[in-house]
Image (cartoon, rainbow, N blue to C red; front, side):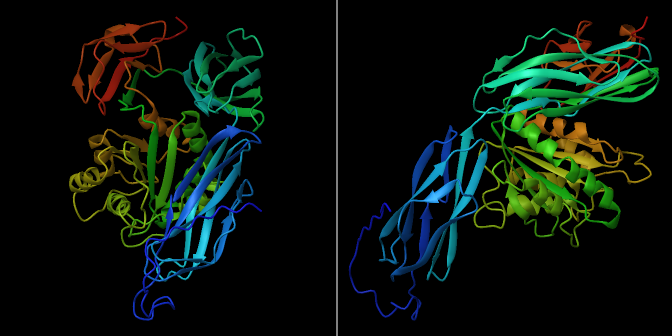
Length: 505
């Protein structure tokens, strides 16, 4: 076995009476440097190495009882380790990562006689270079179509991986659905590249209709199946569409999730959990460096691990976390959000969660009004002091009326509006499109257009920004979109209302 150990002594003086590790309060102090080791991205089968330094910052010898790697066989320990490290000296151990076709993580753990940290671990990360096919949005909701009238839509095929992706076929299976454009297969997408694919539907009888887009490629995950949904219905007399202006694109996002733990929230907790994998896939497809934590406790401390693409059982952990149990503040989501972000600094229980220049999103889910002791505006001010890039996304009862299963989410809705976030109805049964919108707050650049759900009667089309009428726009019939001559400010709510004109006319 190769031996990679370096010992450096700065002082060989008398260490006093505390050679036993603390008889008179003088003890060894252990420190690992770095605490997170990123071994990078490499072709499958290639090996990369890195060094972790074990420091003794104390005043008596540091006795090591074990040094090992736990969590993943892709990482190995190349070095032998010393039994003892003198004060003000250090030892180095070398670790190796053999790349495979996904993201991997493990822990380098050191057990010693350091009373403050008898067991301490450094996180090891590595990634294989691999192609990853994603379809955006996933699932894709094409909106509404009139009975017996055609409807068009578009998805993006994205290579979210780190190696070239070969797409071998795209097949859309569902009565009335078709891929409208001729595509020559196979074709290749470089990492981060994408290609639009137009989908069409010829209306049927009223009701909900579904199809599945099958995408075959050399992605190691295999064939990707994307649900495509559409509602066939008579058009309303009047319609409205809106978006909240994104502030991205950001390279990284830190996502905090609070879930009300009241007894009435069981179905909503299950609905949130069932959509997590789609949410994670969307974040990966958008090439976002993401991490996510769930808190339901008064302390704001995270349930389970802080999740990321490197956590292999993230889906199972998220499912458990959203049912983590509550306390006195279980219906005070802004209070828990504030506590969670406050403890993300220093040595708090959420240390390391907030990263510089990352977009922070607070996803708050409740079927009751916000019930913090302080006003929603005071709580929002506190949250923005801690994390200035925070946007609140409220999944709550609609204001002002609520619904049969949820009271109006007052307080939450105002917080979402004030932070440039969004308000989504907890009363809906299908949350699939919600998470695409949440991800867009971090991934999308500001928009210059609003795509409409129905064809408008132009004489009735009215556009507002934060409730104020604006006339700095034109209508593009080719894309059925309102296009702005001046891009609305980040966080602005942009809305269009109009009378609907039939597509069959």
